[in-house]
Length: 360
Length: 90
Image (cartoon, rainbow over all chains, first blue to last red):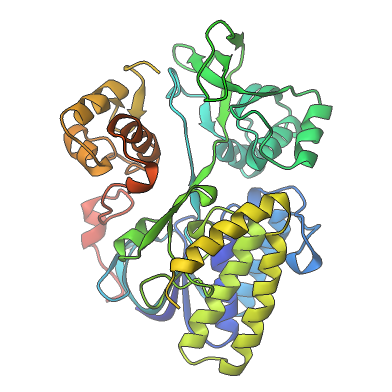
């Protein structure tokens, strides 16, 4: 099989990239290992922030539906339940489908593989009942299954705060939210919402141990000092059946490593990130990244990065030469708006660091 | 954190076993993987990789920046060999 542009991952970044590139005339194959497209969009039941161009006010699943509908209108070739198991030689992708394996030769590749949840290790963390906060969110919002009745949330970034609220909405009790840092990590508005609902947010606290024989029955938390060292004698134990870990995400970048992309370590963006330029092209010509693989940010930015990568890939194939410059400029301005403010500023500076070492 | 805590849950490798590998001279995540099987299971190190990087940084005076993930090899998702040799399309 052949494609002008192979897009790996059909989340917000991959869908947006495919739509733009297809709209400009490129022949796309969009691949996702899941049975449903949309990545994490369909479990986002809260309204997005930002401006109208960023579809602010819409809920994640509405955005997912919109993107999917557009992809269908453009008759994009989407391969679901298909895993890219490797990238070989010059842009040859090995695919695993439900029927076996297949080879896809592409002229350009856009990697939009997203991120994976981090974990922390403590005695008892492998007991059933300890899970990523994202996994809990998938259970309640996609599968409509409550993972437990009494929850300890670990981590006060936006994921921890939002999932805590949604667990309350789903009927669970969030016994406490602990945060190792001395202050809350996520947006004030999300924190206030769960505090109003009676959830204590305990900063400078972390989980020390999960108790239970076959599953989680209780959790011990402990206060930590400024160096994040546990302070003996400050332990408290709660009866909980679920411990959710919301301790950050890491770019899911195996395929970029395998393709020979050069990386840079940027803690603000989740760790090792493939070096990329303003058009999201990596150090390997014709391979682009977009979304969380290019640095952990938000769905709104993932969509904009996807559009940019899609346009840049199509442009490099000779499509829409005149239109591309204007389109890219508009998107770059919108991305800059999204990275304003106390939360965006750090990510803006981190991205600047990457651009500096990127190929032109 | 005590030495019995599991770090790689797929291959059930404990913190103590990883520290022992570091004592024996492992300086990279790949070095740990070769000695202990940590990261060779179903998730291919996606869960334990960062935990091991942290242990390496603590014990070998490296900074996290200098510790890349283990070498990536196909298939990046665990599968049966049967699936790789059953080809269709061409």
